[in-house]
Image (cartoon, rainbow, N blue to C red; front, top):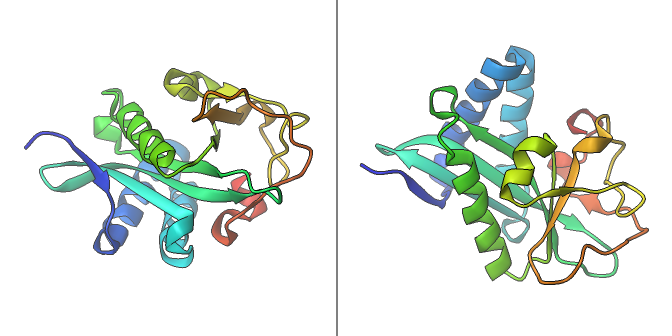
Length: 180
């Protein structure tokens, strides 16, 4: 069966959590794997449906990758989401599956009227799918960043990235210093 990219269903959550835990354990160690697996679980079970999207890559009906996007809240009504976490199982990495998932997710977010998508991670990786590094002087992060060069954004409109002074807030599952 060819690679499928689709939205998650609630029945997928245990498999998503297990896959994210395994993937991050392989690359970052067991403790980080548990932490990010729990983040995925919390995002998908405690965030209102309108404030979270999760897209999956499946092969032979097994989840081999996922991205989760959750809302960032700005007082002036900017429609923004943050892409985190992103996981592709170790044995499928290096095959552009993560990039395909991200491009699929960005298209779905755009169709839902989202203007900006942020992420926090490796600029070398995320620049391949259109993200650019920004400073916190241009748009602050919701919490203190331990890796400021990893604060990234992409416009889903034809507008330039704005300068915004206000600090956004994120959904409760992501609003913990250990994720930043």
